[in-house]
Amino acid sequence: MSCTAKAIDLRSDTVTTPTDEMREAMARAPVGDDVYGEDPTVNRLEELAAEKTGKQAGLFLPSGTMANQVAILTHVHHGDEIIVDSRAHMFTSEVGGAAHLAGVQTRTIDSLTGIPEAAQVEAAIRGVDIHYPRTALVAVENTHNRSGGRAFSPETIRAVAQIAGKHGVPVHMDGARVFNAAVALGIDVKLLAREVDSMMFCLSKGLCAPIGSMLVSTKEWIERARRYRKMLGGGMRQAGIIAAAGIVALEKMVDRLADDHANARLLAGALLDMGFRIDTEAVQTNMVRVGTDPFFISAAEAVAAFKNVGVLSDTQGPDVVRLVTHKDVSRQDVLMAIDRIHSTTGNKGGR
Image 1 (cartoon, one colour):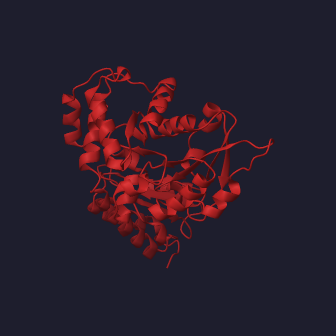
Image 2: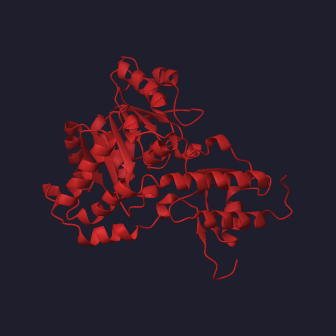
Image 3: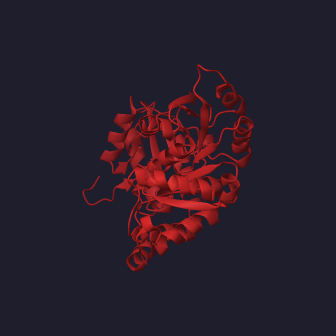
């Protein structure tokens, strides 16, 4: 690659930069002390998040991981058990926070698509026995990162929630990219949020805010969650400066996610034609999981080869590379990335 050529960053949608409108909103945002409840911009963002998702109240937090951990703390007691998919972000990528912070053990379910079947959930819920921990929470992820950004319908979520509800167990949704799910499914995000007791979603990632995530639920639950946010150090002061970008994200950046999804399909189709192993059914939103054979012996080798030609990617397993489309990667960038990746295959095989 020429030293002046632009690197195309497909590692994650976390690399998105704020829009000019976000920067302007941040510069002029009215602020106050949010721990006192006096930041008008944060208050507006929390109201907007609740309004957009059809919940009673919202809570602004610095990150999705903190939001998920606050949700666990709010739902459970020390010594309880939570149920999650074995590839869920809350289990694989949050530094063991559920065990360390909430003192709960995690019971994992191996699912085919990223969300357990209702029968699997029912089998995992503990009965009443002095030897067992109490099943205190079922968590689902939508979209599901390690399943390639699959989007799950309200009906799929409802099947899990009904089983959990039958046993008096609440359901939390890690909806880091739930707006991607709603756009891909062509539905209002409220239809996804209504199936769960609490939900987290990120303002960063595809929505392009520089920082921040939201929890939404009932007013009473959010007030309890607010105490745990403070406990974990998430009680910010003049946070309206960053909340202002979140307002723009929710008002202006949701519909354009469809562009990212179209670019991901374009990328997946081209790589499949080259001979890479891709489950095209899983390419529903902005992620493409690429099996690196027959061209590379490992994901690490493929990532290095792609980087050498100016395409940044990330590993998601020993032989799987993840490519993520986002606002800062145009259709032209995707076409350029396709050409560059094709140059790395050389005479290594394929079809």
